[in-house]
Amino acid sequence: MSNNIKPQKPAPTPSYSQNSALLASRARHFLPNAHHYHSKALQLVKARGVYVWDEQGRRYLDAIGGIVCISAGHNHPKIKQKLMQMLEDDEIQHTSLLYLSRHVVELAEALVAVAPLGLDVASFTNSGSEANEMALMAARQSTGETIVINLRHGYHGGTAATLAQCGHQSWRYRAQPGAATTSAMEPNCYRCPFKQKRESCDLECATNVETTIQTSTHGKIAAMIVEPVMGIGGLIDPPAEYFHRVTKIVHNYGGRYISDEVQTGAGRCGNEFLLSKELGIDADMVTMAKGFGNGAAIGAVLMKSEDAAAFAGKLYFNTFGGDPMQTAQARATMEVIAEEKLSVNAVAMGQRLENGLRELMKHHHLIGDVRGRGLLLGMELVEDRDSKQYATEKTALFMDKCCEKGVLVGKGGLMGNVVRLAPPLTISAGQIDQLLEVFDRSFAEIS
Ligand SMILES: Cc1ncc(COP(=O)(O)O)c(C=O)c1O
Image (cartoon, rainbow, N blue to C red):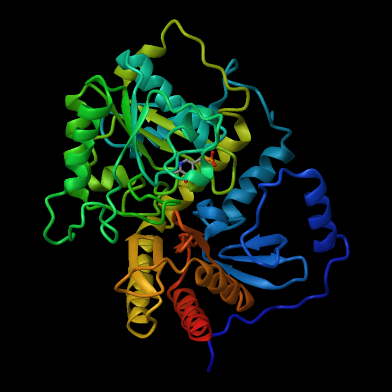
């Protein structure tokens, strides 16, 4: 029997606008760079658990988790209940940090409790970009230095300072200041910029961080910012030893190591809530967003009190950062992740998915590489395994084929040829098998 995810078709709800009307209006009123993931634009209107529905009532298994934002599952009953109760009780929706609120304090306590030792100060923002802005500012203020090292292929946000750290031409703008930043080579084992093999290399990518500092800075740096798994860059996942070597180098040159866990955090990549803790990364700051709020617009920065002290005598104000609803939602998400042992499930289901993808690799030569950690996985698609020619168009086609069969996946990589998988951490073994079956048929149709 086919495992096809049966589209459920209740009568369309007439109040949803037609897709053609929405597209026409977007064309008139949106910036020309507003894009969508599929050749036929999707309108998603409902969600529960690992599923989302379009305006026609068609159901999809959300294997990208609302762009890696859904950790505890869409509309988790406990989180929903908490928010509904707050509204019911007329709880204040906005206060700002100029007034006291228990929600933000409770969240800070909960976050520090699961953070790597020494990261005992927490701050909240509205997004991952702002969290990284704050970490960069703290590092610069604390060290008295300005230069930040990033990695080619990295992504850290859409604001001025974070875009300046982006290693993708498509995200960079002419207006982007390039000063005070420099890039080290990406630790990409599948396409090693040093032409080495993971099994036999000497982590030339880590050594390159030191060479970059020695050749493109004055010998002192403010910070290095790195994702433990480079999400948008195409799920580049260096071995743990890379981080041990690089953090030492960064510290030797006086810098702070910022671990950008916007995608990897919230229990997605290991048994710990944060991958930095799981891998023993000696980070001075950790930033979070996305799955941390399970859909709420919230970001967080964890830092050491020595660096936080650099803010003394300066003002930092963020109108909505730390507001009651967002912080309550993030706190409830943390509770659900702990109570339902979702990070343990992420490890087990991640392994099942990864094994299944490796099995598919045996039959589908389009898959050049499978990589990632936990439930943050990627498949790099190539036209040919020897030349590793990017299969960019086929990646887009694969996404459409999966979508037709009721599965949503994402994509990334500089050339848009890496399929990104990040389902809610609640996904079951049966649902993983359904995904694999849909992938198998989609690849078969393409070839
Ligand atoms: C690793 C990483 N850092 C930062 C950001 C920026 O987060 P936001 O879009 O919430 O500003 C993103 C967003 O995709 C990201 O993937």
